Every structure is written in structure tokens, then in C-alpha cells.
Length: 228
Image 1: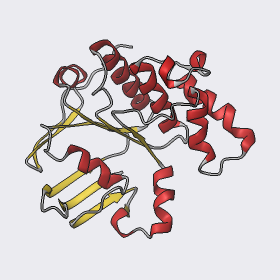
Image 2: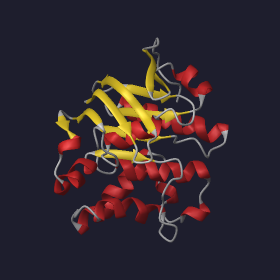
Image 3: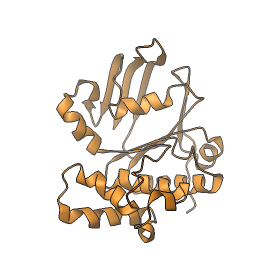
Image 4: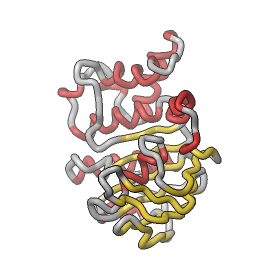
């Protein structure tokens, strides 16, 4: 599903974000990427959805070297990925339904499919009843659920979540992680960056720990079903 082969990333400022990272994530896995601020977690995800290019090494997603994709094919790659951000990135004047449908509209989905597919995605995250609410009318946890629905609306096989609970209270954070776990149980590969040690310890999924841009630990913990 995902491979990083001796990947390093050095920004134009001279900052080294990642150094000689080799990593493989198979289809269906749930992986936490942990580490302190500045350890390279967000950079790693950006390499996967081609927001950044590696300085050295190869980044493969679905077997394709994303660093060698032509500019015109990058959008096609991103349509096969779901990406969730810490700050939600919702359009403030649009309803929950419109925010999710917009992700379909910009990729040329037929108009007749927009509302049914957007509603289905909202239903998956438990927010179909809030479809007419704008972001200001939603709690932080609900806004993050809308952003997850938007990421899922294309049924991507891979979901990337960059600090998805960073702006949420503990109860909302746990709800979001339960949701991501259920999504994973349905077959989607999920990669989550987080600082939330408590949730990582409870869910007991695979943990890749970064320190100073290197893999310090790659541990597959004993797995058990997440309570829902």
C-alpha cells in the first residue's frame, strides 16, 4: 500500500525533516505515527499525498513512485486518498452537506450523484441529521466528523489523518478515534499522526515513533476490538 525507501526530506531553509526513512504499511493496517513536534510526522504524510517531494529516496503509494508523477496526474492520486487535517478546513459559509458534496463537485462527479453520495458519507460518520448546519453551528468534534466524511466520500482505500484530535476535548477525541477505527475495520488503511499517548496506548495498534526525523520505534502491539 505504502512504502518509503530510504527517504530524506531537506527543506530549502536547510531544515532536515526526515533522514533515511524506510517504512512499509500494508493494506488494511491502522498505524499511529507519533513523536514530538518537529520530529517529521506531518512531513511524512505530506510526502504521501504529494504536498512535498522527497529530497532523496522513493515514496510509493499503491506501487507508484509519487515523486515521479507528472503534474497532471497528481490530482488523480489525491482523489484516491482521504486526507483529514487538525484544523478541519471546512468552507465556513457552506452546510455540512455542501462541504462534503463540494469534494465531489471539484472532481467532476455528475450532479445527480452529489447529494446522495454526500448524504451517505455523512451517515457513515453519524451526522446525516446535521446536514444543514454550517460549521459555526457544529461542535469541534462534529466539524472533524464532517471533514472525515469529506475525506471518505470518494471511498478511498487509504485515509491519512494529521493530528485529527489536536483541537478537540478528550471525549470528542475518543469519539473521532473510535470512528477512524470503525473505518479501518471496514477495510480502509488508516495512518494517523498524533500526540495523544493515552489514545495510542488504549487502541494498541501499530506505532511508528519518529525522533529527529528518524524511525526510533516500529511496534506492532497486541490488537483487540475497539469498543464502539
